[in-house]
Image (cartoon, rainbow, N blue to C red; front, side):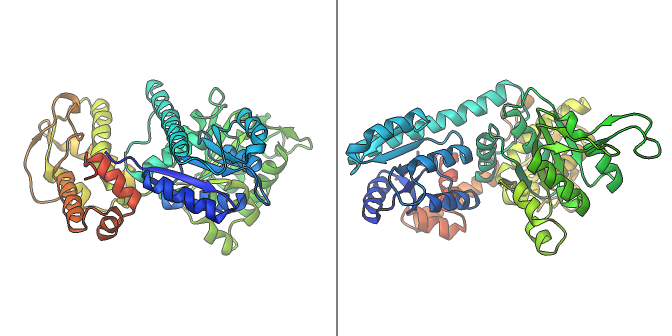
Length: 461
């Protein structure tokens, strides 16, 4: 089977980069290049947006500007768990060994031997896979609610949660309403060193401005009419833990300034108080607004935006990851069945096709409501398109037995998946099995095509 492997090669010598690229591409790697440490950080940020996120970094020790040791430190902060292999001159092996003590995976001497290069990077890739699998298994064994899905977009979100969770960085979660921003915040908290401390949630859009301020910072007795006793704010309640500020784009300007001060100084002042209180609270924020546009329009502070967006996690809307619908339906039907004391064992291909033909403006939240409606209206243990609301329902129906408790449900291909598989096979045949041309013909990225090939068990011919 095809296994997508991505490496970031950072070297200021163009000739050596060219040689390394040729060797690694011949070995099946996707190669991202950077000529300096500074450029490498830019490429890393861009890779999260494009979906071609590196699994391994190959970094030259001696470079002008940011050298290999400095870049190693930055990569450890931004992509925790990603192995870094260092390239060093023969006379500088001592410094490479020192770098391994600081967390580098391995080192190679320049010019790198081709066989040694592929072997070491292969081991680094397998190590990275193991780290990610351990994170996934830990979440499953712990009974955590996973971010359901297997699409490239969801895998990218999971990967960013695993990387950013253990850090102390502020995180800005971006996504439409109903995509699961709160689930991502919970995942970040569980993956952090603060998991044993509280996760306190505040919806900035649900509270009036004056009440939001007192909720965040607390107040002292007599601060205003009705303040009959001291009350700690959410920052104090989250001390040592995490504060999740949902819908941060709705926060008024005066409070934005106060929040910026907290982020800078790690102190708060309760209403009616002249004393400052030190707090150790990690901030995770979320919004369905485009904060860059809000900054340009003068509705959101630019300095606060950059303080919050140390790392951005964009959650794809459901319309961009419809291949996750079978998994989501399977999970949600179990959940809703338990809630409503009703078991659904059978769905129809037409039911799934109808779901896949709808754009889901309300995202997963809307899907859950539609499924609960269908479950409640069903007179048997089967779901057909007639149980869907008019804007979602389809026309065709043929029963598919999913087995007890969905043991077979949604894991075997329904008609939608079969059609997708056939389309990929046809495109591969028409393009001589060339992956890049096939991806272009299908209108998807090469990485997404590789994911589909692996998903459907299609091997390289």
